[in-house]
Structures are given as structure tokens and as C-alpha cells.
Length: 171
Image (cartoon, rainbow, N blue to C red; front, side, top):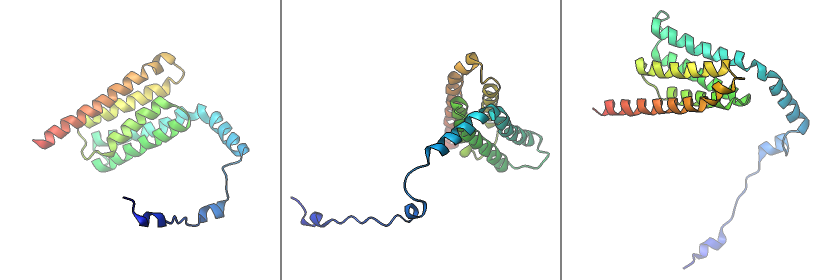
């Protein structure tokens, strides 16, 4: 049985103020082409850009080990997470998909961390070393071809860590 009220439905479309301010359509093709040329030109700088983010991770880990700077675990994890997110975005922009996937895995791992222990350190170091090796060997197909295996193993390592910590938290 049909409801008679359904015939009186009125769709309301609010005025799109943003569209009236910025106009219709996308970017002109010249702007897109120019942006792509810039990205293509600076792709050779990716290792330098990645090195900056890797240095942040390394320094945060070292500070935690030495405990000289009085850095707390939350701050160090925050620094590592931020560097992983930066690596993810930069590697994605320069079409370094494998490094991007490793950085995503690291960012996802550090996002939920509340403690820093030997296991978390090893997982972060494994991601750090993997990204470092891939960044240093961007033109080496033999190493890059093994990257998917490394990614799968690191993802498995993270899953095992969470399974282990979940079991320990339930005890």
C-alpha cells in the first residue's frame, strides 16, 4: 500500500556559494601540465625529501633510547607518525607507490600507539629500514621487486603485534 504523502516530496537544493565565488569547471589544462612538469622535474629530489622525514624518525627513536632530551613517548610517537604521514604524501606525489604503502602501514601503526616498548621499536625500525633501502635503490629493479614481499611481511608483523597486545590486555 503506497503512502500518499510520498507524492508530496520536495527536494531543496541550497545555493552553492562556493561555486559562485570561485566559478565553474576545473583547472585550465596549461596549469595542470605545468604542475606535472614541476613534479616530473623534482622527482629526482625525492630521496632528499624522504631523507628529511627518515631523519625525524631516527632522531625520535634515538631520543627514546637515550632519554637524554627528556622526550616523552607520546611526543616521540607523534613525531614518528607525522614523519610517516609526510613520507606517505611525498611518495604518493612522486609516484613511489611501494614507499607510499610502507609509509601508510607505518602511519597506521603509529596512529594507535599508546606505549613504546621493544616490540614497537622493532616494528618502527623495520619500516624505517625498509623505506630507507627502497629510497636508496629507486632504480634497482631487483630490490624494488622484493618490496611487495617486504610490505606483506611488515603488515603481518603489525597484525601479530596487535593480536598479541590484545591478548595481553584481556588477561
